[in-house]
Image (cartoon, rainbow, N blue to C red; front, side, top):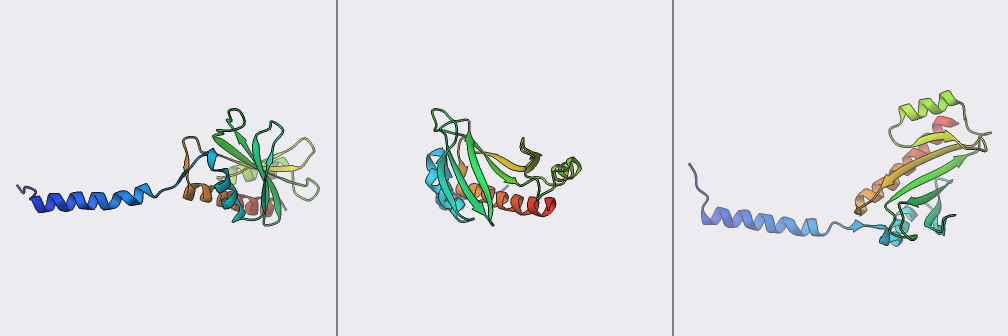
Length: 158
């Protein structure tokens, strides 16, 4: 049976310590980091901060020419929100709102949900959570998924 030597124990401890800075550098974002949310969204197109009908912060923007809104939920006193939903509308006269086409989309694509709003327009949305925080990398990936969802939806419903 091999016993660890003082050298191997010290080497193991050193390797553990050198891995710690990488963990410490991971940036975790919360709702307090709306400026960073805006910065990341700007990487996908134009964006501006606004206030929704409940006086909660929100964003309005464009990705690839498609207008969208990002609403926040689970808020306390218009701050400390813990999840969000992207929403985009496509004119029901220009894009299919046939229930079979909508069902096909909802059953074929993993992210994004399609429905028809009260005005007969196609609605595409995508919800995500960030309760307890989300890494900058994961949030950027979430925003990139929204870009992909918009591209796929536009192609599917044309």
